[in-house]
Amino acid sequence: MKSLFFIESPLQLLNAYEAKNYFNIQKYDFYIRLSNEETNDSQILNLILILKIEHVKIIKINALNKGFKDYIKLIFFKFFFKFFKKKVDKIFIGNYHSGFLSLILKSFSRDKIILLDDGSKSINIQSDFTDKKNYNLFTMYDLKKFKNQIIYQNEYVTLQSRLKNLVFNQNQVLFLGLKISEINIVTEEYYLQQIKAIVKYYNKEIVYVAHRGELEIKLNKIRRIKNLKVIQLDYPIEFFGLYNNIIPAVVSSFYSTALLTMKNIYNIEADSFMFDFDKSDYKVAIQKTYDYYGKYIEVKNLND
Image 1 (spheres, one colour):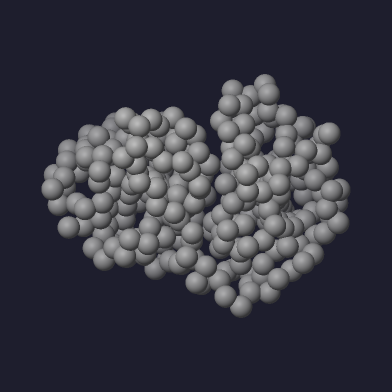
Image 2: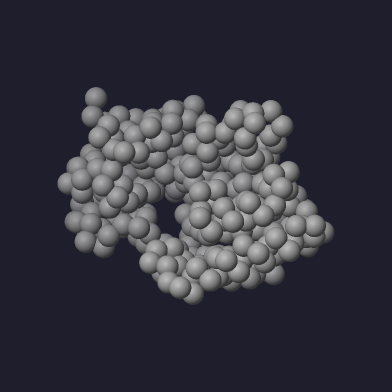
């Protein structure tokens, strides 16, 4: 019997890597779907090399502007994976809401499927589940399970074992940027105002880690803010210590998933800054995330 992993992002791949070791899986295939989004795809490919993941099968299907060939591929995989039904022990799914991966969900029985974290989406996915409709989870979040649901706790044990003998930098703050102005949750002007306020809040070196979805024109404006340095990574932020041989004093952001992963992996202070999202179409999901984060890290409001 073999286990299959279906991945679409760098964070999903990191969580799949942890799951493979958590369950001590020896026979497996990693199906990596590349979506033609340059930064996302390059980070995935780099991470495969860093983690030395074997048995990787690449699937190329565009995320947007699907052509005829993309739809033919979807139909092919829909029937291809049904062939594996009796030959597979576990199926690990990285993105529950993916149209492509929904085909996988429909091809296998519920008891074989385990969902991986895809950012803070896991919090909202679990809140939509019921006793009658749910899937098992491998997650870093402390979630209340439903009837007949199993929640496996991801403590990033494998990654932590690779992060030894690092130097602690008590004067460094990592701020994790978000693309919330790019997707119109807030205006760019408001976002820049909040970043300036956060820089003033800390009396330390601020390293602004750009999100792969942030526009370069906005990042150029952020670069002009005093006491702040912008960096762009080609690897998940969770590997910051591995690449730089240091542990920052604080990791902060608005509501990035990496606040909790960094806190858990490096055992450092994490700050979550509140912002005005009342007019956003995503306000319910954002509030759920802040409510959850507030149980484990300090949520600060500089506008009070």
